[in-house]
Amino acid sequence: MKNSAPGALQQLIDALRVLPGVGPKSAQRIAYHLLQHDRPGAQRLGDALLGSIATVQHCERCNNFTEQPVCETCLDPERDTSLLCVVETPADQVMVEQTMTYRGQYFVLMGKLSPLDGVGPREIHLDRLLRRVVDPAFGGVSEVILATNFTNEGEATAHYIGEMLKARGVKVSRLARGVPAGGELEYVDAGTIARAVLDRRAV
Amino acid sequence: MKNSAPGALQQLIDALRVLPGVGPKSAQRIAYHLLQHDRPGAQRLGDALLGSIATVQHCERCNNFTEQPVCETCLDPERDTSLLCVVETPADQVMVEQTMTYRGQYFVLMGKLSPLDGVGPREIHLDRLLRRVVDPAFGGVSEVILATNFTNEGEATAHYIGEMLKARGVKVSRLARGVPAGGELEYVDAGTIARAVLDRRAV
Ligand SMILES: [Zn+2]
Ligand SMILES: [Zn+2]
Image (cartoon, rainbow over all chains, first blue to last red; front, side, top):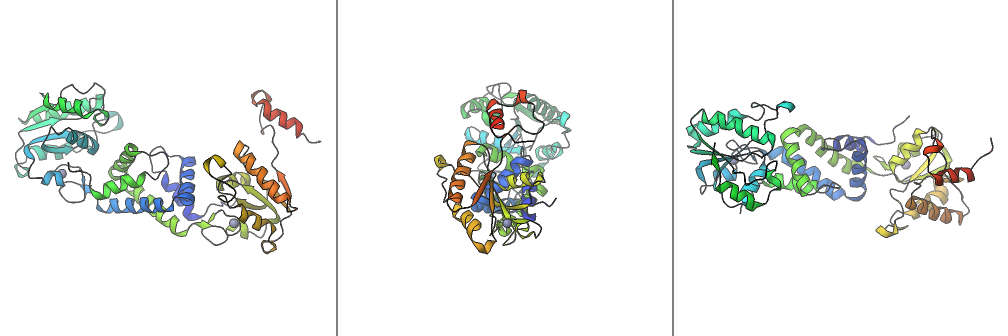
């Protein structure tokens, strides 16, 4: 039987499967919707995808997304370079920033330890975090604040990093449990996170 | 406060909102996922979006998506040009094709009448359907088979088109309703069985 879908349309349907949670049926529905009702939006999305792939890389210092070799946050001369806050994702960094209680620098893991999913210390590049902390070329870090989520995996990640850094004589603290157990930072109000920063404890 | 998200990343997050059901949080998560874990997939999707916008248009005869002025189905010399099957979407046409019982031509509404959503006869271009049926330039159509869905809106659409075409003296039929193939009466709703009794055929 001849497939009546034209090549470019089928390619679009197939390509949409890259989106999390999009199966064949919804890929087809999205493709029809875009081509039928929102070609300008599809154009913007296509441009943004190709543009971001071409320009967005990881910051050499903090590992966050950036369009420059080193991001604006890392280059900000008003930030305290002796404090380094470790977060799981860029969204978590934004949440900590919004508390207005922290003016140090960041390291973004872009993930968390998750042995069941095959994500170990190497996969989240903890060697780069270690170098960031101990290499004098990055400026001396006197304290590392672990701000991973208070989920099982976030706690395990904080524990692992804490042990790794303490073995090198680095002072390490963890956000206080103002954050509800099991809570993800992204969904916690800024006031709670602010309290947790102030109450951070040495680990 | 400075937004730490770089321009191209924020543009991607904003552009992802064009997808149905994607809010700000999930747009952010999808953007991070693609940039972190699936740049080849993001590249394919970007290429496919721009490629399909540039090439996919509507067939002059049947209104389905095509990369040519007239689609392959409409140009197929083995099809019976005297039969025209009206469906709501390209996916519905594929379903009818898969039955292997129909070898006529199609008209794809790319929608259905939905007065509550402001979709009237003009919005689904019923004038084009009418021209397709009555204009001799398209070859004579002797029967139009209405294969819109058996939903309230699909039924209303079929009814409206049926009246429109019968007023022009065109022979119109509707897909039979009845018990699905393989269906056990015990699990079919009473309304379907009632219709199947009314539409019973001699054997
Ligand atoms: Zn940085
Ligand atoms: Zn066609």
